[in-house]
Image 1: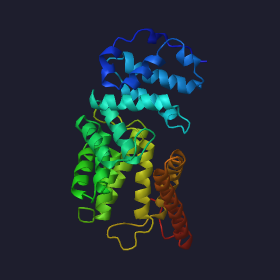
Image 2: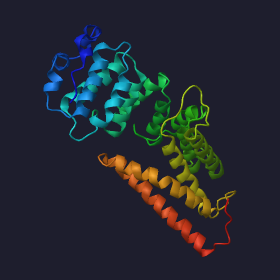
Image 3: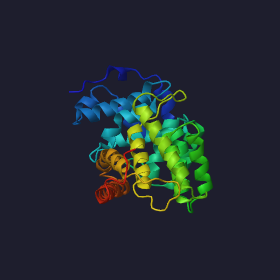
Length: 316
């Protein structure tokens, strides 16, 4: 049983913040922090602790760490049966953090939910761009990259490859593996630049190595470390494999189905996990399901090539 948190007995910063919220939200917060209320509600322990974290950030943290409070509660918020009060307070907390405090983490959370359509914010690409830009100005590197996706895929109308190139290049210059392989995509697909598959492959290899260095703890970045390194390694591995498995007439590319097969196998479990994680997100689930099908097809193709002529390919 979750006990009532005694820290709710004093909340010195709430009076300075509450006028930024609607009267309904003010009443909800003040009701929930009253002694005994949370313990009297029929909630599972995870939901109670999530509510405690959000309330703590709202009422008596200075400076408040709204982003941390969200990520602590994220798993509960994303549940189909998430409590309405928890979702309401989290939404209001994120908007307050983004708009009143200029908090970069709140800005990118809102941007990401607005881009894909999430539990708290409906899909709206203009809203996504707005908050990505704010977070980018606050130095949130992922927002720099996410803006590149907005422009590359034409979420605001038509694709703007020049802007996408600019965004990915800025983050790639700082060594972010996702930005590097996305820059490679532009060269591979000839989007806004002259097609150069050999250079795209070099970028994919660089992204793959950086992600693996980070996983092994060998990478030295500028005062921060990248998250999701296994995901980035898998994305780069897939891209490398797609080029080297059967390059056909691509100039300067040596076929290597041995290595391609290993890279496909490396990427498979990470992408499979993404399929499972996005089971309640139709677009995300479809995207990763298609990628998983490509990986499995690539494995089959690599095996066929090796069986057709096992002596023709040397192991790298």
